[in-house]
Length: 197
Image 1 (cartoon, rainbow, N blue to C red):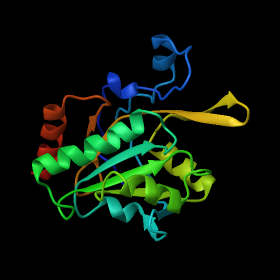
Image 2 (image 1 turned 90 degrees about the horizontal axis):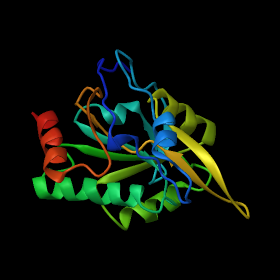
Image 3 (image 1 turned 180 degrees about the horizontal axis):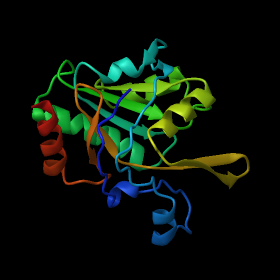
């Protein structure tokens, strides 16, 4: 799918999910998703939504969308971002026919459709979870230049470090802006309003 060429600026948007201590600002910056300049984002995919239905890149066309990559075992950034997306859209009184919301897991081994459904529907009815066969999910995330990496915590447990901005897509499925994690709500809503036209 063609994506508009754009320059992405990274501030708080390079936030990395980390459960333990030890990440310095330099390490976070070194592990950020690279700035995308004149690059096409996204490729065709066939995955599964949280209702168990097939979902493809076509879901990102026909109306603007908000697209976020995260995981359900995330302690702070992901639930906060889902809450923020729900809050922005509710405060703007924007219906689901006007803009879509998507949460793509970068931890498909644990985030089954059923688990995603329970996680998301407990917070919002506006965001659709996307998961699937692990290699296919990882390929989809990489096509969006999304940084993610499994980090072992010991005793068989692990977390996922990952890129944490929301992609703002227009009705053609093109990236037109980013909403970094912990953005000012008014700035976030202004970016959404701009893509609504």
